[in-house]
Amino acid sequence: MFANEDELKLYITESYPDVTEARMDEDHWDLLCDKCQITRGFQVTRVQIGVREAAYGGLTEDWLSPQTFLFRCPVCHAFKQWIVYQFELQHEDRRWKTHYFRVTSVPSEGLDEIVELPDDPPALRKAYREAVRAMDANANTAAAAMFRRALQIITRDLLKARRGNLANELNEVVGKQYNGITLTKNFGTVGYIVKEAGNQGAHPDEDPDLLDFTAEDASDLQGIFMEIVGELFVVPAAMRRAREEFLARRKISPPVGP
Image (cartoon, rainbow, N blue to C red; front, side):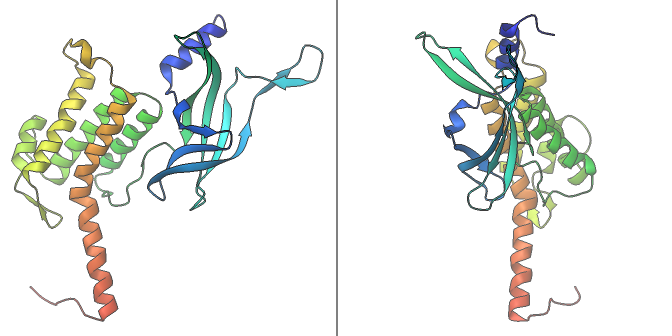
């Protein structure tokens, strides 16, 4: 419960990401299109603003209620919804500026579905989805922990490392074959970064510089984790598709036997 409007605003500013910089103008926001995999100016096709009863009858806009924005990509026409709070904040220069805070996105911001991820074990997709949804909720420390969890599912369940601590598991799988590729030291290096970031999220070791795991940190960590996903799943799948399409196009039958 909030005692007053100031408490509500303080809670919002501390709990949700400030997305003001994404707003280009009244009709366009600079957003990532998951379909096109590019950031571009999305069109605002609808805005729903809360209303309340006015003092002298009728209805008036309620700016303390969240707004619903419907955005559409101008190229592929995919759309998304954001639930956003909008209000004025005073800056150090004493000027007031309108800020926008995203409560949630439908679907979640970021790539929350990767087709190439294996269905078995299901815990891998679940951990990755939870990491992305945690980022969307501005729970960036939780996102770091779930990326680490997803990495350990890969080392234990897919790469069959002996169960121990994650550092040993990463060292053990270097040189192994999986999905037609040989895991290199780069895999171990990238995995180490994900492991350490996840550890910092859970145990910052009393270092004040590590206490705040920001949205930028979480986004960068997702990009680093995607290097692992690309090496293990996306690139091999793309190579298989290219080979199959070439064989079909040239009417070449796959070899038979060993």
